[in-house]
Length: 160
Image 1: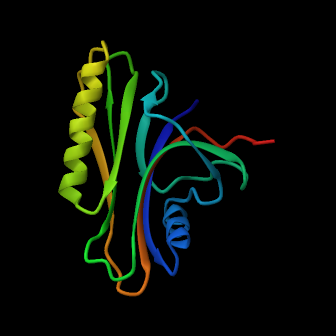
Image 2: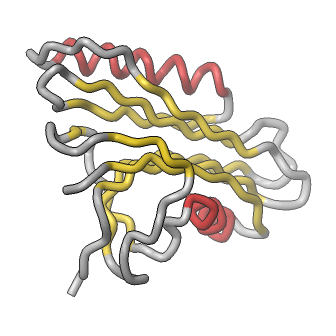
Image 3: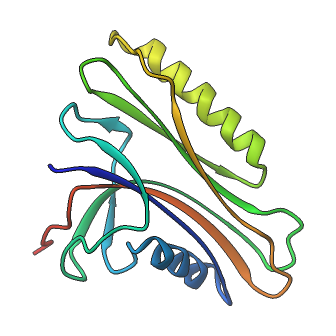
């Protein structure tokens, strides 16, 4: 595996699903079938914050990810907030923690609390401070709004 890329986006659209798809498009991971993992980072690949994914392979293939996403309805008074945090140990192994909601401070606090709890569960020597990426989609009076943060593991792979 070459690299884990952290990408993000936000968008509005007339339906919840089209809003999610549009947010994935902003992150350039919309043409893949996302295969969601739990949150353990292997030792070898670096984790890079890139914002928008490069071409990761042919459309329709599977892309292994850890993801956070939130969608709010039209007219909501709150934003959609998606967040992903990670922490690496000295061996390179690490953990992701994904949280979504409608309050930026609460999402970030929950990520930091979750990473601290995950650190306590493992007998790994963690020396780095957590890294947190938050994406927010402001509420829209006429459309659904979605925020996404995705950690994409390597490149896509054929499903069949």
